[in-house]
Length: 502
Length: 118
Image (cartoon, rainbow over all chains, first blue to last red; front, top):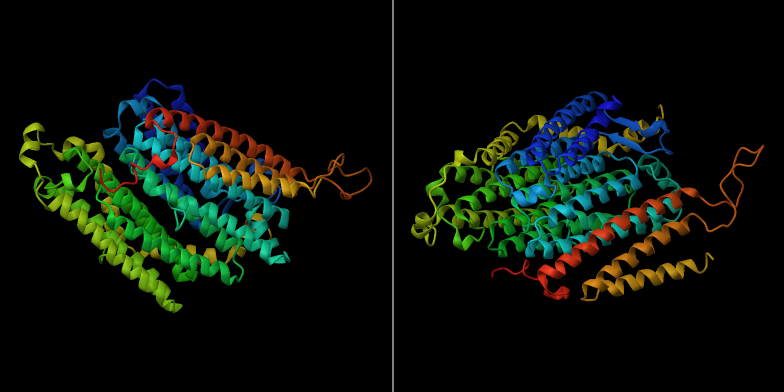
């Protein structure tokens, strides 16, 4: 049982180390990455099967019993996130075979991707707050290098902002760990959850919660801490943006969910209101920011912020249905958003630009690509029967159940504005005529989609997954409800980690 | 000692924030480093500042007797210092390369990625 958990971490770690041995041999690095990403997907699926069987699987590292050693824990939420990570890792890995320049590959793109997957999986399965901090730092340093890799001017500008904000977030994280340890004398999440109820100084718990709120808020880009995201996410090549969009902000959201359902789950009006306020403002500001942009990748990356708002909204409402909505929304958004980024990369290859003004006519020349985009874009905007509709429907229903009409109104309005941004991309990139099409066609021979097979395969598969998620969403929803139930009864997690028999 | 350290930590936080608000790359990086020190020192203070009191259970007894220094935060601080060192080293190289390629050391001029259109 425990080995299944360990192997998920070992595969990308070994993949990263082995590809360092082949520093100059890019072909071998590619092969190693594909093997390790496929292996990771298989291992994660295997772990998922076991976790569905067992409920929670724990690994006490080096045999030290729970509150003293470092525990790795795989419950429904963690395993689900690991599975999503491995899926995105493989999809983006295949995509890079067709779209990544040699200069970046020569400077360790594939080893870094391996280490990024390694650290993200580790962060999802950590059962110890300081260990989580260490995973975050590994993730940061890999993403810092990936962000700056290539040394172009926009990338470096973006990277400086990204690095600064994240170092400040780490400082807050460390301070939060200090306060929590001072209050409870433990770092193990399960043990913390038990002991924090008997801490007399309530205001210090709130203080620690705010430290963590800022730390995770920067990572997941909530209002008003999202400033680094619009400045940096669109600067690296699309494959990197896709993996960042799919994984990095979601690690922040995962940490939010873990901390606020397990540790800070006491009645605390201030924190509840803070979360709800953040959710509303995040989604609203994010969608307005996206509406103002006129560049393909910028629209998509600013849009990430508004989607984070939906995830935080589910957490703030904190009923079983709302948490299930968060899980469903998570799988929807990771797949759809990354897929849209990948499509923008294909459009760039076809038309040589990301600027909406210079683009056009893709529907005429490549209708198949246009249909793939339309499915993902309208799923993001929330058209039935696509996955985005169900994801938003569940969250809105959960909001109505607790009579939080204001946040529901904001969520619906944001859905409407999302449609505006997506229609704008559709009109400008796919529908309208390209401004200087004849001239462009003369200079560039027409490109067939099948000649970009490595880029198209992940896009087609991810789009199919989006469709399946919408039309056959019932098993996922069933799983999401199970996850929500497990999150709402933290005793299951605590008892399993601390090996308390009931 | 425990009366002085909180003021020192507060001073370090204040100094770090003050420097981060500057426009210069170098002041930014020094500010970030000082903020890191402040958090490390805070973590260290939590372990109680006691000299010559290792957390060893005396012979014959079953529990520790007060006062003793908690070793765990000290281990955490060590880890945090090492990680921070790595991150800071990367950040310094980043601003150096950034300075060479962006050709400014004024943070206010790093706005080409934020503009809506060229």
